Length: 116
Image (cartoon, rainbow, N blue to C red; front, top):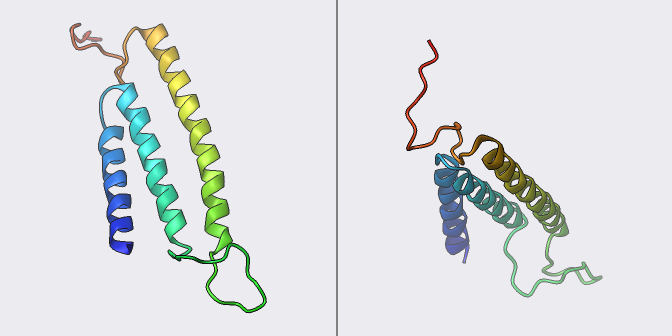
């Protein structure tokens, strides 16, 4: 189970990094979202993967789930959603103002302007 979890986290992080380095705004937004998902999985895995663990510690002790990583992931989900919404709105605004969705503001079909 741990190997599958680590592999999934690694694939999400690698895909997010690859998409974040693209030249258009939509893949960059999707890449940042995938990176936030990978960080959420990493934070969740820091508490240890327990099966059939109690959510609250009882008197007898035993196996229980650590609540701190769960609280961190819940907060990170909310912050990630807000960041994604802001990035999409910012990308739409730049597309409307500049007329291109490239990160550097250039279009493929127009030649580069020489500013000498």
